[in-house]
Structures are given as structure tokens and as C-alpha cells.
Image (cartoon, rainbow, N blue to C red; front, side, top):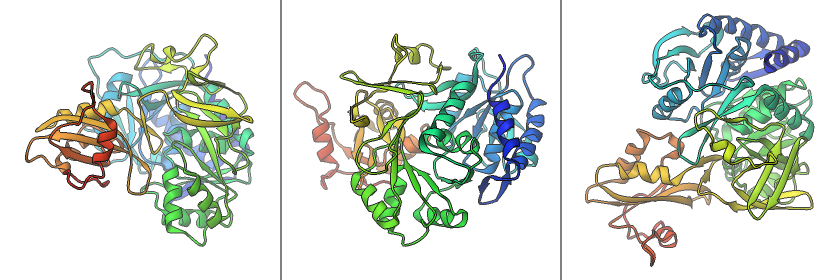
Length: 485
């Protein structure tokens, strides 16, 4: 089967020639330069390909021009890019490498990849500041990729392990094209992206979608503070801002008086955005925030075109959405194919009509989607889905822990965060538990709020009482540090 994305990117990069394609703090590349660098990097990757198979190349790095080059190079070399969240821990990275049968790893030279990488084959050159390492072999059988798969991305699945979603080139292309069409993205747009390209918010709105009409993509890595946002917006004269709700809340708290003169559209997704924050952001900056609803497995689904009023907007082109008592079901042209490392799990969530069960509850009113909750136990923190049972299981393995319960709560700013109440023996500290979690979990799964108690409060049938657990978070008599690190 002939791949879709290499030809599509070649056409787009050639067609837009001398226009600015992508930039970061270290520099920028025009469309023609990006194509040239990506092809040169592809030649390097091709020398390390697996005979008779497509190389599986994991990208484990923060946003940069070099990241985009590496992504394109993998496609041009006939490989399959696996976009791994850079916040994943070395433990998660090791599980992914074994589960998915990775061949190569593109990473920052300082990244902790010793558990899976045997040797570095390239650093610098066409890959800029990134290194390329060979992934060591595992004893477990390597799962077979579908013939149509051209990109793989990850989501925290209901099992707690990162599930690897296979996407066909046609699905990736449709996600970008339908987003560009549905949101009016044009060659005049300059996109300031503060979400990781491994995440659906950025991947679907700011990578291929930006390049299709000839727009420019401007990337920032590191902690996305309000000051950094304003600086990037001013230096690039960005017309679009792509970020998670927490960043908009940070901007509102800082109350900037400048920096948004060129911005016409701000896009938010990944977690609920409080109405008060949306209104205050627009009052301060004059820029409307457009809610966007997407699901990792199904791509971008809705967009609030007017940027006013509540709700997540109407379905994008190529999207069919149903709101039933069983929850929100979607069918899209950008749908993933399956989980590579969790056979049958994806398929169980797709009904006979091809609709994917999202796990969200909500309704359609005047064609606009409104979410009301979740049908599953997953916690949504900053756009990342976390299984609280996984977190509690990890906490229970810490020395001196008797029992643990994890759940969603609000931090001191009123934002959703992961909380845990832990029954411990004398001498156990909150910091020791965070250190224990950080050894095996990515940073976003380490509880931001911890309460240490003698025993877990239970209800009349012996199950943990969530109501009483939540009260413990504000009880000054309980031990532990209730604030986020």
C-alpha cells in the first residue's frame, strides 16, 4: 500500500517554497528548507532501517524545529513515527519500547533513555540538537503494524498503560484538512503553539493543518508561562494561539496589557475551560477563546466558531456525533484504527455502525455540544487522562503505606488536579511518596495534592467515602502537604 503522508508533505512543502514554515527560539526554516533538511535526515534514518520492515521511530522530545524535521524525516524514510509524550517517565518509555517493538529513538541528548537505548547513532547534523539512538531488542514478540498505519500516538488508557493508537495516513490527512476547513485556517495565519506536538491538540491543529494552506508554525518549549506566551506572540505577530486551559488561566492571573494585538483566535481544548476565565481573557485581550473538543482516538471533533457562549461548538467537517444516554459517540474521517499494544480494547469501544464511545456524557443543543461529565473513571488533568486506580496501586507499593485512594480535586486556583489520600505508618512523608511515584510515573501522574492519614475513611458498605476524602483535603488537622509541588 502506497503511503499517503510522504507525498502530501512533499507537495505542500514544495508548493509553499519560500514562505516561513516553522520557528522556535533557536531559529526558523522556510518550506523549501524544511523539505531539504527532512530529506537529508531521512537518508540518515534509512541507513538504520530494519530489513524488510518499516522502522518504528519514537520521537521523545519537546517542541522544536528539530522535532518537526525528525517527524518528516521518519515519514520520508518510509518509517512510522511514534509520538511519545516527553513527560512520560523512563519507566513508561521502557514499557512503550517493549510493547510496540521500537527500533530507533529520537531524543534530547540529556534525556534518560539508558534503559532502552544501546547506543547513539547520530547527534546534531540534520537532526540539530536531537540525538538518534538504537533501541535494544526485547524478548517479547513484536506486534504487527497494520499496512495502512503511518503515524502512532499515545493515550493513557483505562488500564493505566499508555495505549498506542495506530492512524492511517488518510486519517491524519483528513484531521488536518477538516480542521483547516472548519476553522478557516489560511496562509496568512501565524500559529503560536504551546501544546506538545505529541498531544492531539497540537498535532491536529498545528502540524500538517498549518502547512496545508501555507501558514507558519511557531513553537515554544519549556514551562509555558504567561510571560513566555506574550514574548512569542509579540515576536511572531501570531494570529492564532493554541494552548490548554491552564495557560489561559495563568494569563488571566497575570492580566497582561499588551502582546495580543495581532491575535485573532485563541483555541482551547483538553480540559474544561471555566466560563469566568474565558470571559476575563477576552475582556483583557480582546481575543475570543474558541473551544475545541477532540478525542485522541477519533481526532478533532467540534469547534466553537463564534468564540462566544458556552459549549464546545458544532461538529467539524467529516464528523458525525451522537449524544445518547450511554454517552457521546462519534464517527470521524480522522478515526484511529486500533491500539497496537492492547489488542481488542479499541474495537470494543466501536459499535456496529462505526461509532466510537468516548466515555464523555453530554448533549447537543442547537447543534452545539455541551459536556456534562464522564462515564468512565478516568481523571482529566490538563488534557491528559489519568487512571486513579493506577496511581493508588503505585502508592500502595511505597514503604510504610497501608492504603491509598486517588481522585480528582481542585487545587488552590480552582483547577482540576490529581489528589490522593494515603494511610501511612509513622515517619512517612508526603515528599517521600512523591519521590516514589516519580520513579515509575510520568510527572503529570504524580499527585499534586497529598493527604496522609491513619486510615482511609469508608462508607457504610466498607468502600472509601469520596465525600469524606474530599473533606480531608481542607482539614488542617490531617497531615501532609495539600498544595501542589
